[in-house]
Length: 266
Figure 1 (cartoon, rainbow, N blue to C red):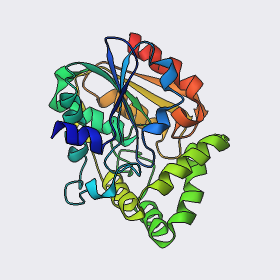
Figure 2: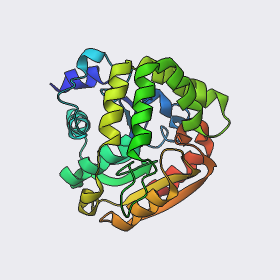
Figure 3: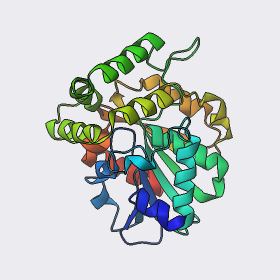
Figure 4: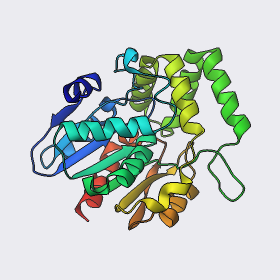
């Protein structure tokens, strides 16, 4: 079982150092999204990289639609990877959905995590009575319809919006990994993520968190970072990066890396 998951999810361990640092990517990317961040950390940490089971770099036969109806399947994968590698304590950096996967994993196994670094995290994307998640249900449904109608056109429109900043290399990279995904898997996972609501469990998180948000993110309004800060159960801080977009590790790695470094040292 342990070697199977390590192979299936392309687990790689790099770097020197006693402390373990896990990087977990979001939907639409794979572990290559961290490549411009890694040089800042591999001299000092044992870095663990892996792909979510929905990533285009993973054999789609491994994606079980029945199993992946909520985020718990991804939490299982993360914990199984850490157990297979014999990790008993780690720092965790999670982008977007993987930020929430880290939150859920830390509730289940708090002793495993020293600190969570949450980039572009959202416990709920849909607006609610007293909560601004950024999207109305109708907007989300029209996105799903666009994905189904013409995946290529949707990717070509969505990638620059998500990257936000004018960084053509980042847009190309995000476009490439989106096209690597099978469209039916992208749609299924997007529905799962956009329909999830993890607000009720935030108070159960006791592991310290650093919430990293860009100054303008089309997917996650700034108010969501404040919501997390006010509702997570442990010590936490919010850092706002002076750049735009949902993928600062692709568009502004030299700005993001020192912020992660500082968060790890506190």
